[in-house]
Image 1: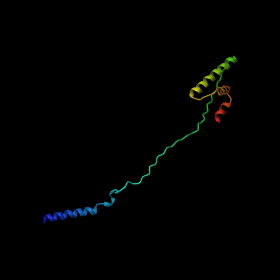
Image 2: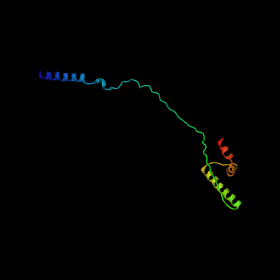
Image 3: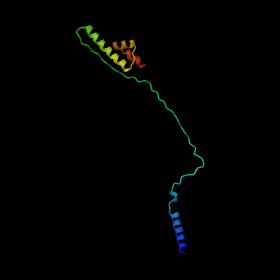
Image 4: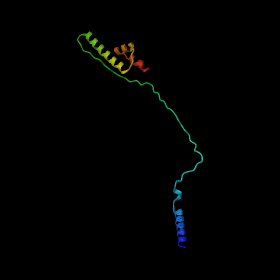
Length: 113
């Protein structure tokens, strides 16, 4: 009879545990026979932007009592500036370089269009 009581006691303890444990809070997951439907999205994006204009101002002065030496000095400095501009990667035609040397606004107007 003692063996029978042990079995009944174990059964009672198991039943108490079954009723007291929070079974509703346990996430058991879901059983599915088929894979869930999925949507796959792939894409590509490109961006283009117009060239932007940068402005650069440079002034050249020469002071000399001989006019020809002063002109040659200014022209030499302007040629140096134009060489630096070309080294920077800005393409200048001969006409644009002449306009730049003369200091006209036509040079910048041609780039603003």
